[in-house]
Length: 445
Ligand code: GDP
Image (cartoon, rainbow, N blue to C red; front, side, top):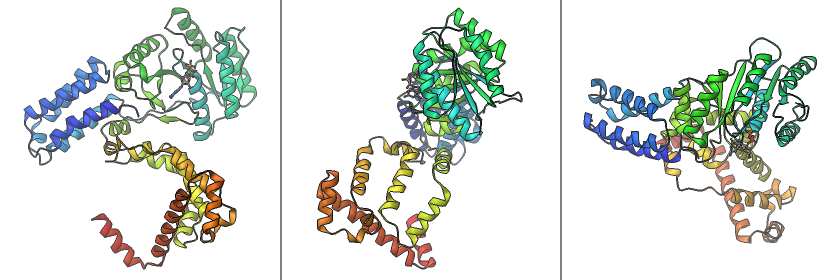
């Protein structure tokens, strides 16, 4: 998970002040010294750190905060707001403009994730904005780059316009736009060439493409793992090309946070998206306020709800709830639910979005292999057994264990847990509503 160390250090710095009923200027000073170190260690730009500390301090030692009844909470609120501000306040979305097709240019250094994110963005926009995108392979210097984009296009079933590696990229871009117009594509995403370092000929080529295609968006793809280098790269590209946004990639790794916390402030270019993995469905809108909450261990309920809405079919969920209430819930339903949960993402990541859970989860590892074993046991049952778990007697259990290569004990455990769960569902469904209310109230106490 990204920002783990930063997150821990900030939370520990803040914990000291939340414990206190009264705060002095000195307490704030001590806390801010720790915050400063945490940010510097996370590779946040020194200018950004200085300004951040100054802002928070000024606000935190104000009369109203120090004299309030909950000074610690107020300080956390200030840190949260300032972190959010640092990353740009509100999420900024893409501008499609009015011309057809809209044209987006993807730029960046080699290895940052440009080609992967050309694919990710196209499938994201096809789903979210109902776009009909065309991808364009303009990285003609690396034959592998053209092939990579073709492979991605095939995987996503999104067409790729390519002319191999012998044509000039500016001409390819021009032909691609004419092709898009003729073929009803309302969005063209151009994957441009990358280099290991910024060089003049690359910039000139990008400027030429820009002048020709007049893109609505020029998105710089940068690797978050490169910390302050990412900021330098962003500054250079912005000077030359007037970027409209940044896509920060590899935030699924253990990035320290420097890039995410410095880029916006240093360049004034908004971070629009973040890449969260190698797979093509791991692109998320960058929400500064949610990111700040995640860093401070306050969870991210909004993202959790959105992911659930995207992945759970409402009708299907209602059907399952009905089955639970009527106690007709069977192993097939259980499998379905497990699949839905898997689509939400790694369990640890989901749990961390729940406020208050993040910090306690540090050492817990939820083993995806365990889930795979549960699935294997269920797949080893016959359809009849899945529908009617009461059928499963000792000899059937033996057969199931052999079928999936698990211990009999594991099969027994799963079936017992499942039967207990069904019993509980039955009890709930027979309960009168007043009894349920009493129980819910007791659980909240
Ligand atoms: P390009 O040279 O900028 O086009 O970079 P590529 O798209 O070829 O990506 C370089 C490498 O980074 C590939 O191995 C990708 O799978 C990987 N990659 C890209 N985006 C992400 C991301 O968000 N997370 C992780 N973990 N890997 C990524």
